[in-house]
Length: 386
Ligand SMILES: NC(=O)c1ccc[n+]([C@@H]2O[C@H](COP(=O)([O-])OP(=O)(O)OC[C@H]3O[C@@H](n4cnc5c(N)ncnc54)[C@H](OP(=O)(O)O)[C@@H]3O)[C@@H](O)[C@H]2O)c1
Image (tube, rainbow, N blue to C red):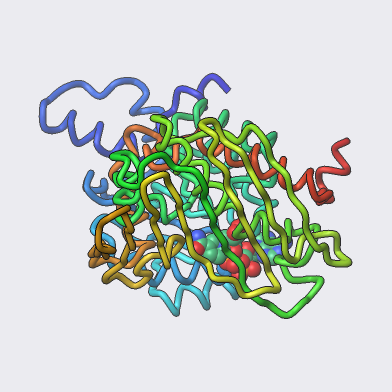
């Protein structure tokens, strides 16, 4: 164990070795500990990040398709529960190394960072295993099933000194940065009401991850998590903080026979008398927009969750008392998942991103636990733990 804790990851050793070569400094002992296990592959350029993807589902494909448009990301490997699926994915996206297990991606020395794209109940397990193997982590949202699991994941990232980010890609996008600026400079005065919706319609299938209790189904965890994270961000910035936690959480929902929420709403109260009305669904197409009402005006964001998905223009509508309505245009040439991948590379040395810190993820998971508690959604793994 002592040896494991002392051994740096490949990504740490590459630049360290390059530094030693350039300066004739003697590599520290910990370099040799790692080098013994890692054959001498080409050391990566510090401005690039080589990725391994865990899972070959829908969002894994979107990430793989977008990654070549990032400035830093290279797709080195993919892992699936089956070799066949890994090979198919590899052929479609031109992935050099296709593994028939997730473990093999974690053992692959050409991989510096992993993108975890499994259903939510597997996030904690693979985050912890990735951290132990010294891989930096971008984990799909929600970070875990609940707050207790999120604590264990963050503890692992801290102990093994790896980067960890919950993949709320909208938080990395320039549109959200602009929104934060507008709230911070009080362009609509004091924020009073936040309305956010994220919901779509899918046919019911009890075995599909969106509807299966065992696979962490329900709208709240799938896309309601965006609305919660946005309201916590806006309420926080409005009161001079990076994010805020709700003092009250109320909710009601309609549940499926599988005991997951099909459509659900929440009302939350934040410090500063800020109220949020949030709605989510997996069987109702909603507006999927954000409205913020303040003492001096209002803001409307038509695409708050996936602004300019493939790159291009995103817009924020601003209405201020006594002034003509304004349209603020935000240009981003890159697709949103490429922006996210570059964001990981930019903050990797800091281990956390300022756009979604570990404390922010913990607060989000706690608020989601409270919303689920209000409507009585409990997952299989949570029941067996009691
Ligand atoms: N950021 C975004 O825009 C966005 C969008 C959609 C989803 N997501 C998140 O990404 C995650 C995956 O969503 P998805 O829509 O891509 O799901 P999906 O299409 O069902 O794919 C999930 C993949 O996870 C792997 N997996 C591992 N254990 C599994 C199990 N027991 N049952 C089913 N699949 C299992 C499978 O890959 P292998 O068979 O290859 O192992 C599967 O293809 C979720 O946490 C979701 O919240 C994020």
